[in-house]
Length: 480
Image (cartoon, rainbow, N blue to C red; front, side, top):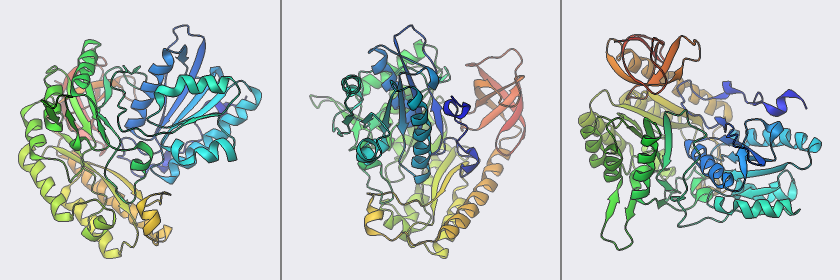
């Protein structure tokens, strides 16, 4: 077996759209091994967003109960699952390339089972199973409980598929196997699906309608994480600000601001983050809740997508530029200038003019973002834009506009890092620096990377660090 079959060397990390992108759409994680002596081995790769990484932990938990340990070695696997992303064409190309590699490996190991999970499952089920015949099972994001039955069907020689979307499934009762965690930070899914029909986005069609998890189950999961030694949770949802849960008898209602406070009160030593906020839904109540609790991190991902109101209307974002600017002003007013804000920006959306592109650049100047996740428009089959709008901006124009957005954003990111030099930051240590085992790396409340000498500190410690300089993408300092 050739080496590339069991590595991810085929991934070209240089294609990431911006150096600041914390998790670009092409990000991939291999779940580490559990090694508890179970008979069968599961190898799972997760592509794309934090929601997929969280879902893979749910899948691992379900299959752990069915006799599967996880392994980080494809060569040892009895079952290979790729948890996929459809949000951009590049992500789908990456998965297809990987499936070709794995099928080459399967020719020498015909007993190997190969499956696709997640967002590509519903969209490409027929192609994968019947036309191209490159997988044995296809499972959508709401059907993971059905995996044991589907695997049994494949064991019996059948192909298996379940991509049914649910209006109720939240996996609230399943305790994830924390495989995609550093042992310090953990993802906690608070809702699934999305009711926003942004014209460029495939998520409502692949993940279904919006459903909020029982607030008590979320708090219990966070309490369990604290008891297990975790120091930080990130509350996940396609649009966390639209979280709304009601008790069965209708006597109790919990919105996102109230949930955020309940989680913050689990422990003052537990840092709380969340992602993603929608500009149309983030409320002053959420911002005031963040201001009241020191352990709620002062970082908000607030995707703009465009700085032009006409383009925003075509995108069906349901807000215009003045509305977005008012939300940025509210963040600065309530949480102060130090609160970090990041954005998503799409260049070259359908019919975008040069003047409208300039509006996106001017929004970057207005908001002074700390981080940017920037991409050129990639038409996704089945979306409203694909059905109703012409993808009429030449690729070279999209790429040129994207580079201008990246260049402008990097200027602001460097300035935001520079203004933090000379200050003391509380840093949660996540591990050693990638460049030196003698230095530790962690993040401050603003989600900025901070690197400092190891000393006697270790992963999971809170350390006060005086930032003495910056690389433009990280703060460098000394413990004080």
